[in-house]
Length: 73
Length: 137
Image 1 (cartoon, each protein chain N blue to C red):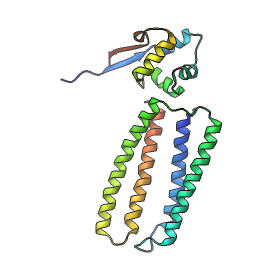
Image 2: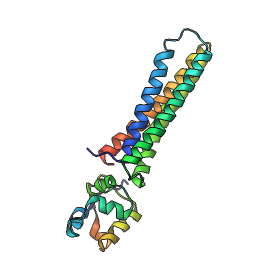
Image 3: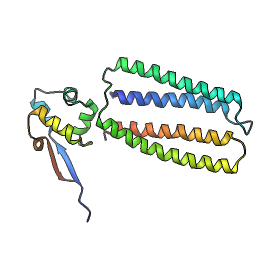
């Protein structure tokens, strides 16, 4: 039986703005990826590895579920 | 449209490949013999040296202009997808070259079809990566 495809969404943009309007580049530098990758994650075009996801959550000081959500596609 | 270091590097490799090997193929085709002549081997060596020099100088310039030269997991994933497409083209080229080696005499056509497919495979791999970088995947 095929598993229905889900979709990972995130709240990174809102979290960045809540944190003194942090830029994508600043976030990228803190988590060790390129600005283009942060942009792709924010646009839900790229799902990061668990390690990067945890690093993002740690930067904002929130649990992982507050940054990423998994819902129906 | 701001390009990342990776994208600039890929464009440099693509342009240098097309310029160096495009010039080489323009000079050796159409062939006037069925075997590779010594001067064509020299021409090939010149093309390879030009390619290496262009890429070293170009990458040095890009690195000076763009200090952010780090790569991340997404870059690696995109590179893998590019390699997959590149490998498919190269495998097709090897098969075509072997077939040509059987049905034609001399080594000119066999060698140059193999070389052309190698260049094409690189171009396809780089084009795939550039597309994925732009799309965001």
